[in-house]
Image (cartoon, rainbow, N blue to C red; front, side, top):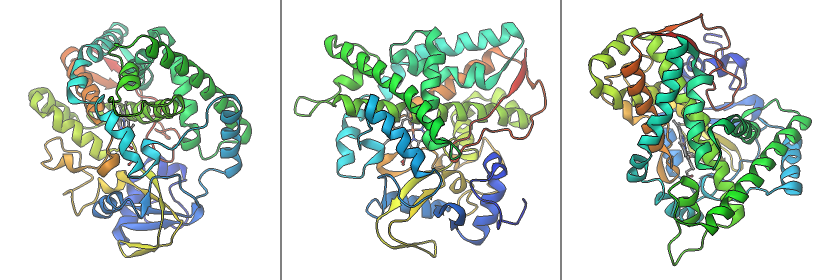
Length: 414
Ligand code: HEM
């Protein structure tokens, strides 16, 4: 693939597995480019990405028109099932622009506070300790399935009112809810199957909302969201709550899994950095920022272009689909010296944009950072040696247009 970008692009298996050589090649010519096969403008430069994310009149978060990453009949089939048997998503929070965006964000900001995240630390640590103890008992694990998925998954599932043993059910819901955005090769039949699974999730959460409406005062995420509105604010409707749950689950589960898996693989590939972290635990926050910079769990997200605009010297026509590629911006050599070097002491690691930028900045960033630091503090406290139990095979990642879902990471631990 090296060097030649004529026949490869973001839909290619090789590029999705390791997009960084592709970004490097593209960005050496221009920080913004057009993906011909899917008619998508990609904004890869750090400065250009921040400018686009700050220019909400031009780059709207309303669903994009004009890209061909998912076939329209697949989208229609999926939405048809929601319409018939469940609830069609309503435009709110991540899928709207200011001023509409502000109402939901203002209410939710009261739930996702640093103090609230601190209150969840004992629960995060309890889940983490159990997962680490289990991997030690067995002398190893498949890190993605046995740790990186269940840590954020069990946390959200519990808050939804599911027992720990119902976590596989939650996981299947989350997969279905991501399928439309994630799988650009889905058939109509598959879309119908996935939509039916999302409908099951919708009916489950609606019953949970009702329980919390009848019994206020709980400190779980769902109770807080249902009751977070002020006296002079309208409470979220059921359809709004369903859509918010969709955004919290799709935004908060596999993203954190990606970050945890990336962190572990990077430590295995860079034993010198692991030793540095073991010797000086005060490097933990910067280690986390460097992981997020080096391998952004969300590589890119959509925007739809409202008026003709020139970014980084490239003319983008009105009504185009654009994607801000966080993963490329985090490797921009104009901002990060030797961007392809993983360095947990990098002074400006936190200038990454893996949690976005501007009004849509990730609502769950503090929660994700807390889960990552609890995870690696407890892992380093309890596990003295990590080793790859078998070599990684291509492809290392499952297909995804915008996430980094690692397939398997088999470890031996002591
Ligand atoms: C390492 C883990 C995570 C990463 C990399 C990540 C990444 C992002 C990014 C890039 C955005 C910006 C979206 C945009 O501009 O359109 C975002 C927004 C958002 N994230 Fe996260 N996220 C993570 C964890 C979480 C968690 C744990 C939650 C909640 C439980 C969450 C909930 C959300 C929500 C609701 C939004 C939309 C905010 C808005 O539009 O105002 N995320 N996230």
